[in-house]
Image 1 (cartoon, helix red, strand yellow):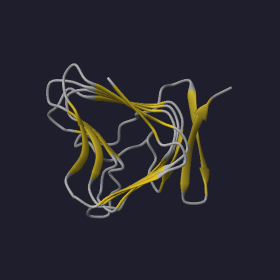
Image 2 (image 1 turned 135 degrees about the vertical axis):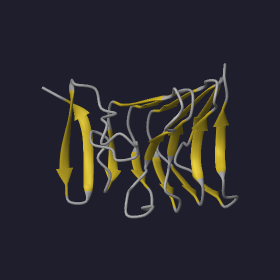
Image 3 (image 1 turned 90 degrees about the vertical axis):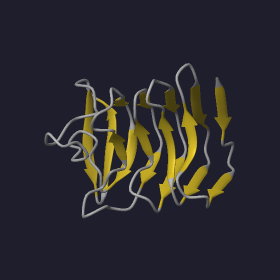
Image 4 (image 1 turned 120 degrees about the vertical axis):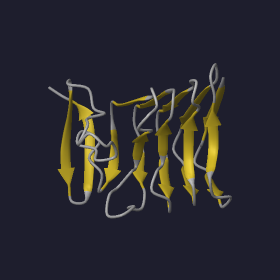
Length: 148
């Protein structure tokens, strides 16, 4: 179980591929104001599990995906997320097509990516947003918050 408190700091990752891997039986929590800039995926769960919790922070990648659920769980409780499109589609959050992973977005700001209408999965748009949340549009940003 690992907790990273960004505490106002910036992490610049230039290694490509994936910065953090969270395998079965492992958990990673990222919290605090701060930024992770990466030229690869920021974090992924493993084929057999793992749990990633994002409480806060700013996450920017020059790749297509910031967080990926391969076989584990990704839970977004807040933060700001920005990625680059791949073939015209933003894959900011991505559940691997043949994996059993899950993604839940309870709150957060997403650049040009609507987690309630994600086109990252082959069977059409899916929602990673629970029914009791709402999504509002603020320019190029989709903001997920608790509904009334």
